[in-house]
Image (cartoon, rainbow, N blue to C red; front, top):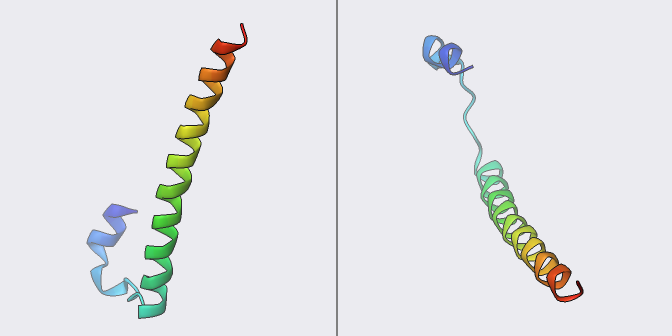
Length: 52
């Protein structure tokens, strides 16, 4: 895909302002969800050790 983009730079569609805003919102949401998943994994490991 990167090679195609290099070979065809004029064919790349521009991203509109609403799409940029949504992309930024989604990237932020992904960061938050990854942090929550990491926290929950650590909490689960902690409680698994406590109950053994």
